[in-house]
Length: 141
Image 1 (tube, one colour):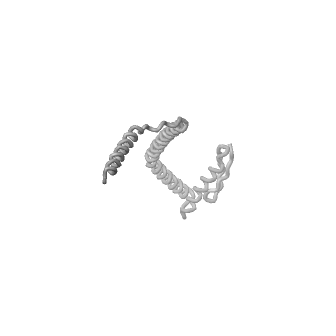
Image 2: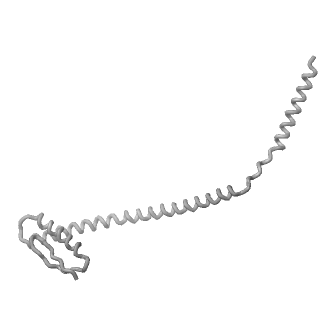
C-alpha cells in the first residue's frame, strides 16, 4: 500500500492506495480541486458536495455517449471484418492467377493454328485467275 498526500480545496488529505496508483489518484484529486475552485462561496462541505455531483453528472453523460457509440462501433467492426474477408479472398485469387501465369510462362510455346489449307486454296484461286487473265491478254491482237 502506498500513501499519497492529496491537496483539495486548500486542505491536505492522506490517502492509501495500491502501489503504482499514486499518479492516477493525484490526477483525480486535481480534477476535484479544480471543480471546487470553480464554485465560489459556500462551505467546504457544500463545495465538495457540488463538485461530486457535477463530476457524477459528467461521468453519467460520458457513459451515455459511450453507450450510444457502442452500436456504431459494432457496425464498424463488422465492416472491417467484411473488408478483411474480401481482401483475403482477393489475395487468394491473385495468388491463383500468378500461379497460372507462371505455368503458362514455363509451358512450351503452343503451335500456331494451321491456317495453311485456307491460304493454300486462296493462293491457288489467285494463281488460276492470273493464268486466266494472262491467257486473255495473249489472245488480244
